[in-house]
Amino acid sequence: MPPPRISQGLLAQFSQMSLSASRPTLLQQTCLSKCRFTVPTTKPSVRLFSSTPSNLSYLAPKGGESRKSRKGRCRVPTGGSMRGTTVVWGDYGLRMRDHDRRISAHQLRIAEETIRKRLRGMKFRLYMRIAANIGVYTSGNDVRMGKGKGSFDRWTARVAVSKIIFEIQGDLHEQVVKDAFRLAGNKLPGLYEFVKKGDPPVMGLTKVGVNGITEEDLKRPRRKEPLEQTAARLPSA
Image (tube, rainbow, N blue to C red; front, side, top):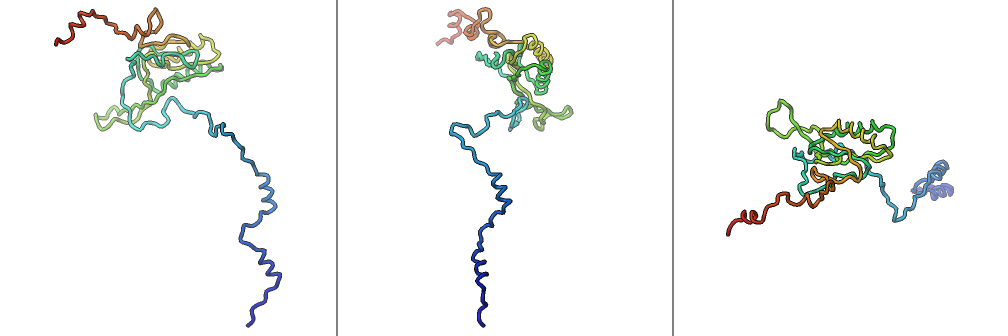
């Protein structure tokens, strides 16, 4: 039986066929031409990431706690540290003046809202110098002793004596800021004082540079003994 005969037109159609992707239609070509964009070229000196700081809260840590914090005590600067006792960023500040304590995040939030409510309509910037990053864990009233530390209750901040809590910067009258800090201090536990930028630092409870008191005077030993008494306390050979 002779093989079937194929016409030349059919062979031409088969030769034009290919396994590649089909050509885009006129509508697809129009969309591609309109949606075409160019990649902007950046210089090596230009940052490829955002320099805007992340929106973090001073009332709670970002990552929580990996282990339950102990109750602990507030830091006592026995070595003569004066860090955090002066206004750094703003023009006015609120400073603790009685003794160290723990302040909860709820109390700090109420104090901040009180300041913003008193200064409503004015241009200012409020700085928080402390952060509530220590967890407090409690048990119920009718729970017996033992069997663990307890469940999470709140976030708190350990504030040492003479620490700056809030700072304000802006075109504000001093009496208005003083009144706002007075209202905020009434919402917080303890006694507070109003300070300005340039006021002397505080070592413990003593202001350095006031009444002729210097930092060297506060660091030297307070008790002076004669050489004979000092030598008498030494063990004899």
